Image (tube, rainbow, N blue to C red; front, side, top):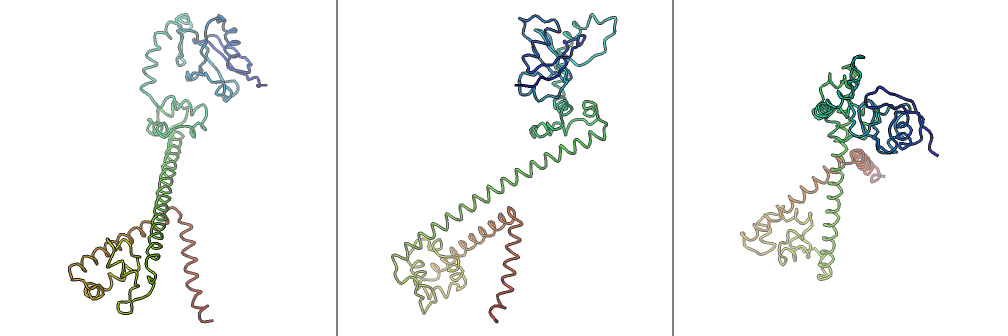
Length: 319
């Protein structure tokens, strides 16, 4: 069973105000309307008395604090801010409110931060539900006017805007971290796929060449490496990084003797191997940069463990 909630109701001129205890929004309309003398057959709109926010949702009604003051409106009646009215001219309140409704609407449209300020005035925790655009609107709002709308001193309004800016900065950091993590995961997937493809190519070449791991005594290259260099199209893409380094280090003249080619053809091969080697080194550096950015603590621990292992290894060898 829903708990009964104490509320206050008034009409649009605020001349009549009553306290009621109701369990739901519909009961508020019905009971409040009876107190205010509304016809049971006429539709009633419920708004917050302080800022005119329309209340249509039962869940939102239940989230409001006890003793919240509501304004009940009939057809053609609109909410307006509190105005001082002379006792002698109180009878003119209805006409005054109706005539000034358009002016109030246009004034509110010129101040996009006003409604947001009223939300904060009701509940500061509503910050967490605001979008980044809404937060930025409050940050950019004129401080004296924002302080007045919230009922704050300017110093407190300044601190509030600084807090909102920190919330914006934190959301931006979270977005950048998410994008960096997605980039890291994509790079890891590409690296795994390249390794799988390279493994499949190596397995296929090993099946075709039974003596692929034998080292050629004259050149120092593995027989499979020589076979790839001499017989494959774009051999630089099929060689391991170590093989590429060996080819580039040997130089043009040495590779001419190993391959038995002319200088022009050998030079073109070495240029292709050097370009492929540089590309792979750049990929490795980019991967290391992404990993160090995404997991700085893990990278530091790994570096310390690696350094520690390197120091212990000579001691184990000497023992």
